[in-house]
Image (tube, rainbow, N blue to C red):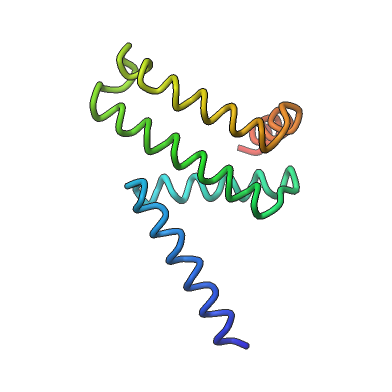
Amino acid sequence: MNKTIITSALALMLSFSTFASDFRLPARDVERINTEVQQMTKVLNLSNSDAQKIKNLKMELTSGSKEAAKKYGRNTPEFKAAREPLWTKYRESLLSTITEKELKQYNAWAKNNK
């Protein structure tokens, strides 16, 4: 049984590191995203599939934003234009996973638990 638990944990860690490398994200970004999604899961009682979907969305947005910042510089008009479709897709997909009310509930919780 211990071997099964260790094997499962190792497979999970490898899948996270492989997934993160697909987006070329630094470990600190992956850790931040994982923490946010864990908190959202706890506060909103998300299913594993919803939590994974949100994690993927956050990684895509972060990766795309970093690439746009590298190309155009942060907070330039070009950066904002390049990030707009990424943000729109993220927001639409997020709201197809959780409701606006749930998002507000999580944001209120996060604000009060910094």
